[in-house]
Length: 93
Image (cartoon, rainbow, N blue to C red; front, side, top):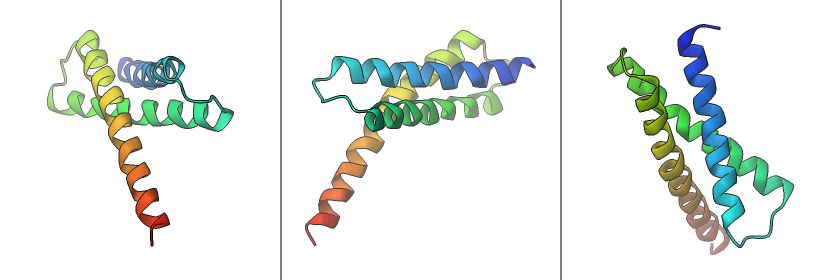
């Protein structure tokens, strides 16, 4: 596995772990669907950090993981709030 593939795999794992950690500290009722959904959402949003490698090819892995962590947390939170708002608007029609 090449270095950039390892970095992207690490971003996926890290994003999923952040999302699961966030879920575990919340007071929501845990369901299998919620756990899988949050893990996938966190993994997908942390992958956006890979775009940083296009702009800065020599970006150190630790910096890339930091960017991925931030984007994973903020991105999944934003998408979740946006989806809930859209579902409420759809139910109100």
